[in-house]
Image (cartoon, rainbow, N blue to C red; front, side, top):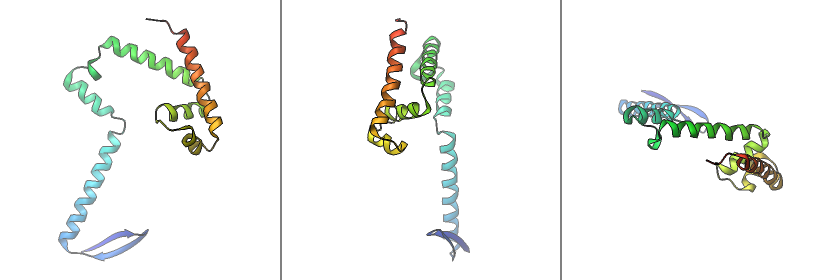
Length: 137
């Protein structure tokens, strides 16, 4: 059997035995299936929905009231982020969620550490103002 493989960016035709051909074919199918699975579960949503369906409770056993409170708070926090510029939001999320340093964010965003710090500080001040006005429960 003849198989075409990519070697250094060039397609090369190689003659192989039937066993090798079947092995390569199975490997291609496994890689394709894995790729499909990763695309389906990239945000974990289906897995969480599976837990809710089988366990009958939300994540960590939260009650519907807790879920609604969490979603309302998330909506309010997203509203605060919506008041920020795109650069501020991106830099803040890279810092807060991805844990990048100011220098790493500066490299990713092609800017100085000072401008990264100023963006993050501006968002931080908006959140402090939000939490200062947030009703205590």
